[in-house]
Image (cartoon, rainbow, N blue to C red):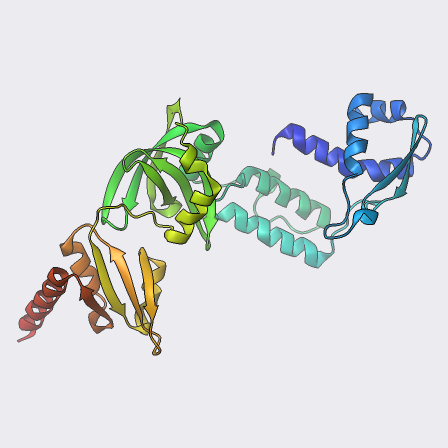
Length: 319
């Protein structure tokens, strides 16, 4: 939110208690005290008529009566006094704000930290190491990515691809930052694969903001296509890679949180059948062997035979 919109929001919230306290004041005098023009005040008063309690009807909206040059608040919708947080409300709000500071997201950590400091001061809570709204040890990758998203610049990423088990370099046109299931992602158009991909922040090893504008991709910013990407797999694996079909025992289902797998079927005993794209047979075989007998290859045959041969070779070492 820009500083201009923030100033207007603060002013709108204060207008109702202001006119209740200064009953009978003229709009000209009020505009002068508020530091705005009479025309801006008129726009604010018009907007206030559209505000009220969420989920209710028109009768719950703020109501004003204007007689010649004066304004009278006939219904305040509860905004007739400054907001006072209880200790419980302040604690919950602080916890949420601190989580936003720690978790990469579209929220500016500097703004969130500033809000924390102000709430702590107002509520009389001891500061939690964020004096003056400063952010300690800001993640340089997050800072660079957020700057590129805000400025509309392209990014050069050095990224760990889980499906290829390799570090890749690519140039992307950032779209937005998304928070999905407690993980933060950069949603961007990848010029390497010519499609929309989601890049996990904890897998971005380095990010460089380029001195060129991000290219426009109408299909990439389409909301329906964006949600389809999330539903189809947030890992954004590359097309053309071979697909393995696996059976996973219930004891190793935690792997679903770490690798790009699609669940095909759930069995009554809690096990699942999944499919996963992979770059090399060597890497995929090593991954499966790490689960012992809890992971079984169903397809393709060449991967199944490779895993079987490696398992036999390992057993021979014991004899």
